[in-house]
Structures are given as structure tokens and as C-alpha cells.
Length: 308
Image 1: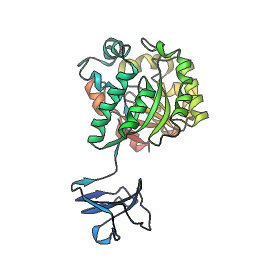
Image 2: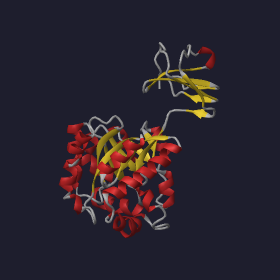
Image 3: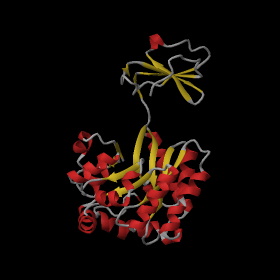
Image 4: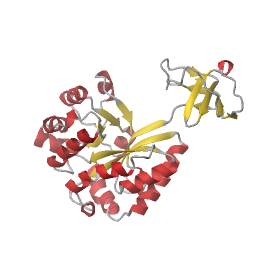
């Protein structure tokens, strides 16, 4: 966050006990000032260096002021299912608890679930999410209405309860008209999300990659989340990253892979060379006891890693 070098007259001035700037020098100002003009930050600095506030509204917010947090892997409307399936491994949790319930969910349910989640996220400083969930249009409208910035990735799942959204091919092709629907919404970006290599056929992965390349979309998917999933796919394909390499997914410049727990050195090297970003989900991984992602090894390879 690098504010303009020539400050303009602010409309709102925020005074805080500490300001984390995340500018080129990563300054932490104690205390600090943030000026807002229109919908943009126009100046950040120490109170003694601040420009004349003129007629600005001055708010002493106290505490810590910093850029909003980003949750890079969410199924936020699952707030409605909170507590269901506690203590189950991933496969049993998905097939026995989540998918049967989600098969009954309506677009309105998702709207309310996302509205509840947005309230919780914004209250604790998360201003941007990357979402993967059913009824994506309803989800996106709820996020936008709440003022939450979100990359809403249109899902593709070939499984129980999902055929009401069409075949996997129809689900994949729905991403482009959904993107067009929100083209003028400054808070919403549409991506595409084949759920995982174990819930869609390889042809769906190939189609999603093709659409992501043609439309410059984020492609978001789960990778090597659990040991059981990894063992099965490693026997079948070598590993998910090796499968992605063969199918051309590593050519997608905006590929975001969630979890990435069961990765060997070759897998990490492939993702690092392909510029794949990783959504590291330690709380989720701990909850279902799926393992510990090799975070340090990812960072040592220069990979981009965010928290989900």
C-alpha cells in the first residue's frame, strides 16, 4: 500500500494508536494517520507530518489500523452447517454430512449463510475472501451487499446433489455468464473452481483450465488435502501436481491450490516452477487431522502462500 506522494485534501482522517502501512518500507507508525478521499486512501503518515485536514471529518479510532486481511480459501455459507460432523475424517465428513445437507440448500439459504459469514469476517478485519460454494450468484450478491470484496469461484462437482446444477460441463461453462453478470460490480470477481481431482473427471479439469486461460480467471481447487485422497490419486496419476502438469493446469497463471498437505519434493518443485499459489489452511487441517502442510519448504521455494 503506497499512498500518493502528493496528498489531496482528505474527506475523512483516521487517527490510530498504531498504523501498519505495508508500504515499500513496511513502516509501523505509532501513532499514525490515514486520510481518505472518495473511495481511496490519499495519505498515510505520522501526525506531525500530516497535511492540513481542512474540513475533513476527523475520527480518533484508537487501536491498530491496518490493511484488511484476506482469507484465500473459503466456503463461507457453511456457517449454516457449523458444528455438523465434528470429529469425522474428511471423506466421511463430506459424503455423510456436508453433501447430503448441501443437496437440500436453496439459493436463499446460501444468501443468508454468506450474509452471516460476511458479518463475522468484516467484524474481525477480513475484507476479502476467495469463495468456492454452490449457488454462486446468490453468494456473490450477499457478499457485495455486505460490502465484502470476494473472488467467487464458480464450482464444478460431479457428485451427489450437484447434478441439479447440470453436468460438470454445464457447471464449468456457467462461469463465464456469471462473470458477465458481475462485470460492473467493483467488489466481485468471478473465477472457476473444479472442486478437486477426486470429485471431477480429468476432462473437467482440462475444460476449467481452458476457460481460465481464455478468460483470465482465477482457477481454484483442492489439492492433496488428506492422506487417503493423496494415496488414491498418487496410485492413479503419480500425484495431483503431476496430473496437473500433464493436463496443462500449470499453464494457468492464476492457479490457487488449497491445502496442499501431502506433497513430496517433486510436487512442490512443480508448483513452484508453475507459479502456483497455495492457500494454507492450518485450522481446517488440524480440525480433521489431515496433516501439516510443508509451509517452510513452500516459502523456501519462493511460492506465494496465503491463509485460508
